[in-house]
Length: 183
Image (cartoon, rainbow, N blue to C red; front, side):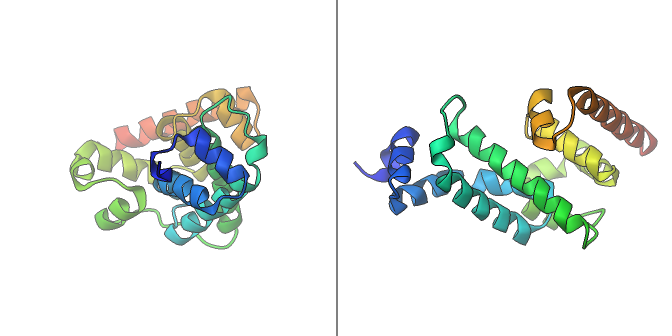
């Protein structure tokens, strides 16, 4: 049976033994989703690629800490999100992120296909989110796009539950206000 037909548990066991073909198969299964996750936070294609690759290296070296209480994909995604946030904070000290993206760049960077992007509501929402404070952008991305609940966001951002709820509430209100004003 080829590695491409193996279940993830079998592949992970092979990865722990240092099987590079198994590692390649795991990478091939998850790299696109992990790249898009990193890109939504970092907003730079080269840095997102680096973070994604470093996250895989980190995951493979720490596979013995994977307990299996969550899916491997969600465990890996948490590593990518954490590494992306660290990288975004580092990058923020040196460069300013662009406020608006052209349609082609949005398709390339966010993985949105042309039909979805053509939707006026999606474009409007994307533009409004780009104008939010970075902490609001990050917390809304984690909550609505990545699907993390409050407890997971608290762990990722290392903030209290009350602070998390407040940030999400303020970010939603800020987005709501900007959407109302732009109508």
